Image (cartoon, rainbow, N blue to C red; front, side, top):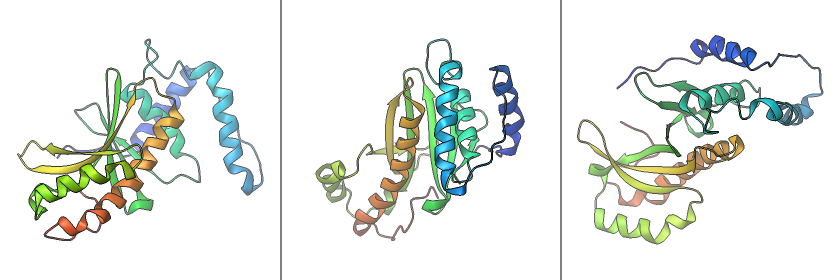
Length: 206
């Protein structure tokens, strides 16, 4: 398993990059119930100058630019997701505390952004044919997400939930994909739990 860096190791780099884009940090005083509005206003003000700059020359997200955007998003007091880069790869790790510390993985490659998480090992399935048939019948119940079987480097295979977007997608669309995948992963594990030899209460990579 590759070692991951912590959020704090990227904050200084993130702030430096924001300064290079010509952005400045301003403190404002508002009523607590207006917190969501101020974030929307901030994003709209930045969009005119930095939305394109945060992407590469082809107007596409890269792992680095997406990390910057997610780290900025995580600075909101209303957001508790934890984001980090995975050493030696173009992948990001996103931990969702509200979903029991479920870990999602985001990769950016060319025209595509892939968001995925592991559900349960294939070896834990009691009847693979029956489970696969049930998935084909019901996967439409989980919006924006689908299921695949992934083989790890050690040869172990896992059922995984994933969603794909264009690397030119709006940031809000990426956030929606992340949030929906986390919710769907929990619901998928519950929906298909009867096909497991060992109950999987939470999606996790063992």
